[in-house]
Picture 1 (cartoon, rainbow, N blue to C red):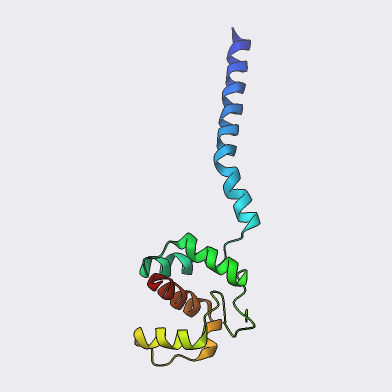
Picture 2 (cartoon, one colour; picture 1 turned 90 degrees about the horizontal axis):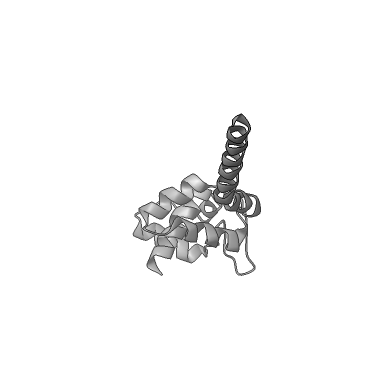
Length: 121
């Protein structure tokens, strides 16, 4: 009888482990494969501009691989690869008078403007 209880306990613990692994493994693999930098800014500005944060993270990964100093051959800058003239228009619409093109290398500014732009697409 005691052996059955021990065996049943081991089975239940193993089942719990494998069930936990089933739920956690995709997240672990995702974080290793696609490390999410700037998650607090992504969530903050995605909510502010009513954009899915996963879309925002996907755009950042696709455009710059989370490198805030990325520059494209076409002149797009920063994490979300914004064209300076587009960003200047966003700054005007947001009543930001102190905007400079170099601000696009600031992750917070770039994610703010990028999610604002995504919202309008």
